Image (cartoon, rainbow, N blue to C red; front, top):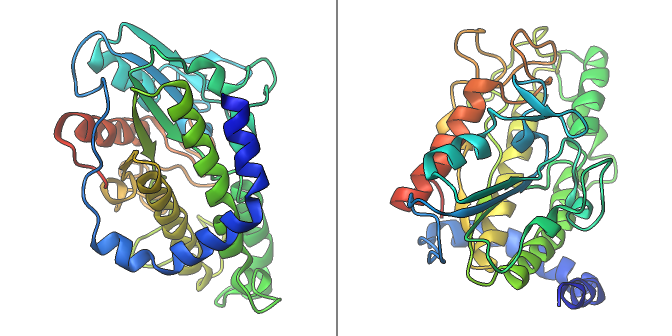
Length: 306
């Protein structure tokens, strides 16, 4: 059945791309009319939940002590582990892996098997945080840092991604939407009674658009551009979640004011040269705890995103 879902999604890729571009263009109406999605099956803070966590490095928690899977740079202090502890899960499978894209839901990644293999009809709760690597998150940061010296007070990175007259990062987000849609449909097919939470990405840069070079080496006017790119990615995830009757967990709002430009005592996202155990431009232990709190809020109170 899972193969059929994926084949169907691929056969309609062109039509889906048009659909998602149109849907993203109408995102303001979607956001304005958002209401909580219906909960499915388990979760809700009750003991005995069978919980599966799917995701990339923002889920796995690279370099955060204690690392329990070297191949995937997975921590036992990441947000799924914190949530599982609060749930007193009957079973807990964390198959998140650093560097994962939507393809790794079906394909092995090093010693990590296809992530969707962890989901079955007995799963009560599935969290999914994916899409950042599909749009090239790591390469975007590297490119923007490399271009900054050309025009330190300007927006060389934004110009780079707009050389064709169309913002390529916006296009990449639109093209990632059908891939995330495909993942969620496959989760539903494998675990039809599970409660599915799509977890958004936290706030990496100052929400007010200000910069903090050279601590974070981007050009001044590229800070708001990259901030907006993160917002657009999260908006896409919110839209795809609603399209699939899943629930969206907002981790951006709760992490505002704790971005990588803040002081070591206040930041939950590490800069490109971390001072706490975490990967560059990734959540530290406090950031993972904040995302866990957002997921828990959604599970127990139905808030934390629509």
